[in-house]
Image (cartoon, rainbow, N blue to C red; front, top):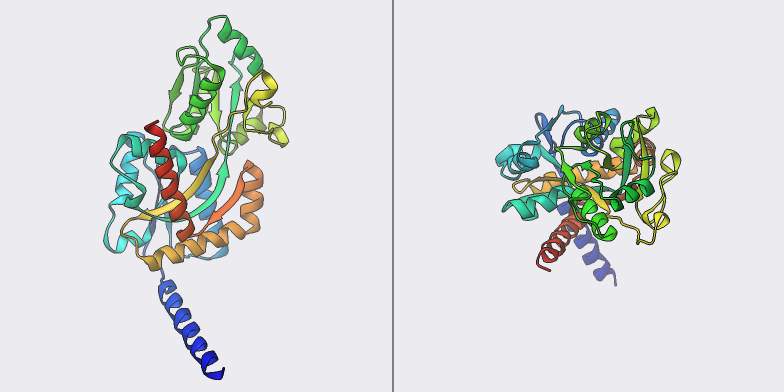
Amino acid sequence: MKKILAILLVITMMTTAAVCALADFEPSGNIEWYITSSPGGGSDIYTRKIIEIIQANGWVTNTFLPTNLTDGGGEVGRNKVAYTQGKNADTTILTFNSGDLMPMVVNTDNRIENFTPIAMMAMDKQLLFKGEHTPYNSFAEVLEAIKEGKSVTIGGSKGDDVATYQALAAELGVEETQLPYITYDGTGEAITMLLGGHIDLLISKPAAASEYVEAGSIQPVLALSTERYGGNLADAPTLSEVGDYKDVEVPVWRGIVGPAGMSEEAAIFWSGIFKQVSESEQWKTEYLDKYKLINNFMDYQTVKEYMTKYQEDYLASLDE
């Protein structure tokens, strides 16, 4: 019995040593963090809040350089990160969401295998908002206008916003010419268009729209969810409350990846840092609660499996 315990102890010590060796990583130089949507949008807010929490707690003392690269619908930024090699691969990070993966696999040869998944931080959903120039006070009025043959324009970002719009149009049984969608580089740009009266409605996650709702510049008219939101979004009904329809929602995951060339030591290190962020009170109160997201942390091993399966399922859905 003592011999067996001794063997088990040795194995445990060897395993612990191996894990410590893998985790023995310290970043050097600046941290290049790329965001493939415009400043002020949901991904931008998400990224900068994570960086703020890391720096406030001193978990990483290196300088973070968040950079918005929106060219080519974000594909330029994704390519830049995917093919970063050598030492820089360990200090290059990309904000990567379900809304980034969907257009990427349709429009390019890039796949999740070209990256190193590091973490998932949260789940998100959308709403429709009206602005001061919107001629409709409710989504019921929007539906009435469409029945009368009028065209109602929706604006929003890429990927998951487009997928949610398409699901909404399909459930309503309307042609896209009746409910046209304009794609912008980020939600921030779409909000600007709504405020200027260039579109009738905006599709957005709560994060990007929150400050404008608080200021009274825009108002929610439809929750693209199976249940209403709370707080200052509570007045927006779900689709089933508006008419004889099923509720429409396309949950959005918010993740973080690195280049394919990132070392396992670096992936473990960054995954641990982001886990600390996800467990912090600042993350819960200043991001999740404020912007009404769901905490959904996954470490680098779990999120790799999740993103790979998500990609497989999405590619399969395109062939249906």
